[in-house]
Length: 77
Image (cartoon, rainbow, N blue to C red; front, top):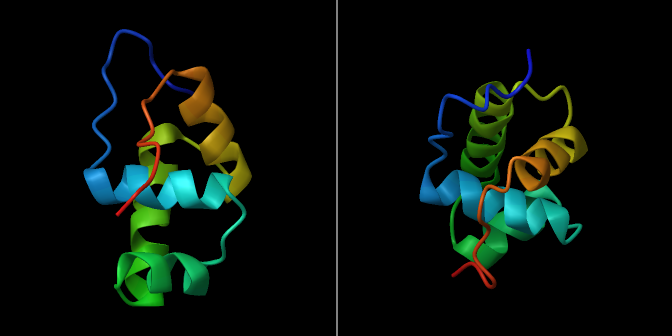
């Protein structure tokens, strides 16, 4: 499944935040500490983003989001 250009992406803010931190090389635990949420919640956000993007891996999700020009916050909270 690939991104369909005629259909806008609807990633949540937390999905964006988590993918942006994945792009910086953080683990689920590192992302959880940065965002003050549980690692299992981080995992759920990343899995949801992967599903929406049609990605097979975390890295693939980051790449697809980049290619689709999904905006990432400069510095997630």
